[in-house]
Amino acid sequence: MQEGKASCERPAAVVAAMESAETGAREEPKKEAKGMTIMVGRKAPDFTAPAYHKGSFVPVSLSSFLGKWVVVCFYPGDFSFV
Amino acid sequence: MISISVDSQFVHKVWNDVELSKMVDGGVPFAMGSDGGGAIGRAYGVYDEVAGVDVRGRFIIDPDGVIQGMEVLTPPVGRNVDETLRQIQAFQHVRNTKGGEVTPSGWKPGGKVLKPGIGLVGNVWKEWNPKDVYGKR
Image (cartoon, rainbow over all chains, first blue to last red; front, side, top):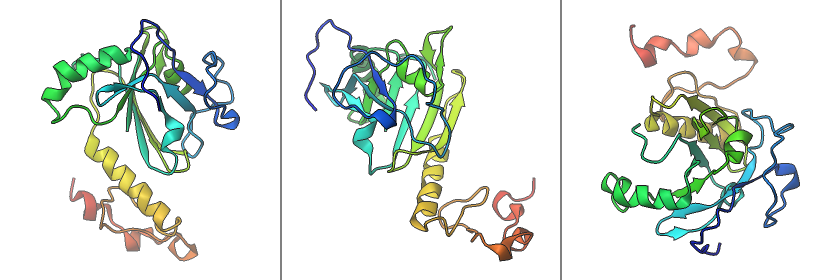
């Protein structure tokens, strides 16, 4: 992936249903999460997010981890205590 | 490993540089994703619309992109990484045996596994005892 420019634009994270895995195309985040039930044993919703990774600003996509085990951890905020 | 919060990637960098790199040699080794607006958290059912943040959700996803485990905590309590690793090892064991061996409660690598089959119905007690893994409580 290409390193993104550290511009003032804030590209939003993009969530895509696995069924319509349109890669590359930046589209509005799908607000209606219907049909994307989160459940063990079901596909994880794919997403692409702006990210910081070892000194670079590079987007991260869940689908780039296919073939590997991956843990996705959400947390309330940077500089929070726990 | 991917971490995600609603903070920007720029704030992630500063947090890594000024604080996390003092806890982890070389700094955070994985991608720190930005979920401004909460679209990803919403898709995963962990976005708190009132607080405007992603709560402490953790998802174990297998090589096929299937969610095998999930855990969601409110903000004040931190996760247990050892337990996450144990679960991944258990899921990997099940996958490597194509489901032929399953891991009972309290299983750790090298521990007793069970082989599902008609002979095991009603007979788990002969194969596995909670005292063996949890002791007397």
